[in-house]
Amino acid sequence: MYYMLDPLFDTLPSAAERMKGRGECVQGKLGGGRYAIVTLISNFQMKYIESAVVLIRSIKWFGKLPCDFEFIVYVLDTVTKQKSYLAHASILTDAGWKIQVVPLIPPPEYVNSQTSEEKFLPMFSKLHVFNATSYRGILYLDSDVMVLGPISELFTDYVTRMQEKKSYLAWVRDQPQTDFPGYNCGVMLVRPDATVFESLVKGRLEIKNYNHHWAEQGYMNEYFVRHRDEMLELPPRFNVLANIPTENTTLWKDLKQDVRILHFTIVKPFFFLSPVACYVKKIMSFCSSWEYVRDAKPT
Image (tube, rainbow, N blue to C red; front, side):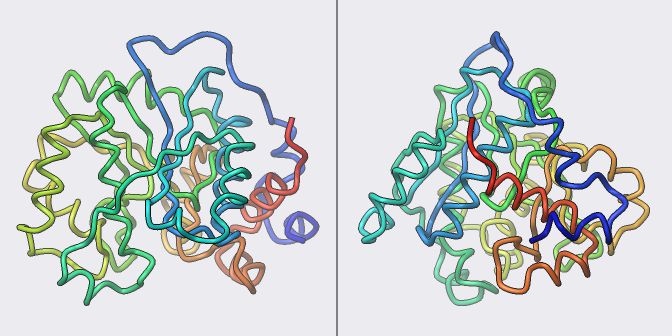
């Protein structure tokens, strides 16, 4: 549906044009240790399974990463009890994800009662990436993210920089026009460390002075304000939020030809009436690309 309409509404490359740049993985290794990309699924509804499939396809087709790269999906242990688990798990593994069942890291009670959306509550379980110490670097991506350009420099350049500066997290600042003024947790480059993991898990019960509506994102921003020397800021091209084209036109002018990672905040291409929302937010080209990747035959 989208890719029939986007040339009418968008000056960006159409989905068909963007798909011409579809490539394969790169031979060789990055060097320096093991790396992985991780996402989290806390609900096994089909729309989230589809999103995870689009995510891994987009990484493989546009991310230009080594062929032996590891792709891990964290599945909460509570989800494995759902009736659809086995069928949907096979879809994920067929797409290339390695399933790792992890325990829920529950939110504090005051977050549980005050967060803006129930779907945010399991997201404290993202913290498990900080404990994956067998990896030199991990890129955590929400499943509503799509990779549209090379991302190897995150591992070759930024992980090295993080190691030199003794930083454990690199992320992109959220947009000042949004209700949240800090950093966005949908894309996080992590240098795992067991001590940092323990501190984060413990701190979620002790640190209370943050915006509880944003659940783990509010907490992690407050935590790293207190540990500012342990974080780095990534360029905006590595987490381009869907509201940018309409709400930050200056930044969008600089970004639109070099979007490496698109984050479908607010607008989800798999939701009912999303074509209208994609048009209003001026991201029709990206919504059409998401649908194109979903519908394409895997190689």
